[in-house]
Image (cartoon, rainbow, N blue to C red; front, side):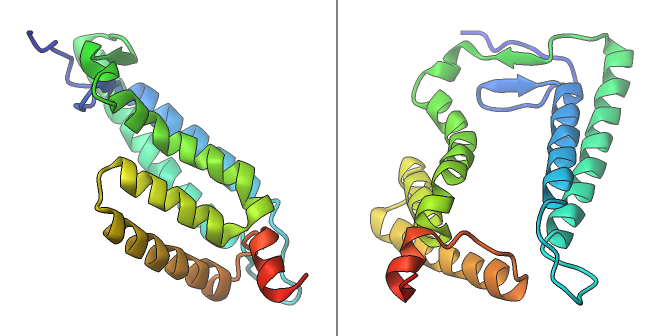
Length: 177
């Protein structure tokens, strides 16, 4: 089977090729959403910065990167003409590639739906174990990595950055209430 050829503005990937215009717009929209949502985080009384600082800094960085990608896509579309924004390789739906592609945004939805109910620690742990196992990390290593990374994220965001992570049912069981 012949491999389809794409213009220089398309990202080379396994099964989906996204033009830099689409990718840049996506990252800018994501950055705006992060920045606006971070503004809803409660401020700490008496402090000049709060939990919204770190997501807003990340949002600004993502917006700058999105603008650079958008600029590159615009330049390439001027040079070679605009083609399609998304190109799906016919083999993309085979071999679990589509599921792998959808697992990352699906993981975000999973976290958003369950984190408040279950708490950050069990939700992040289950999410990471599921992703590690799907991407064929050995089960013992997946469990160890999920425990270490979940603990590190809880420590960094919950203790160091003072981000109010969801306590959920898990912390109620541990600490009673």
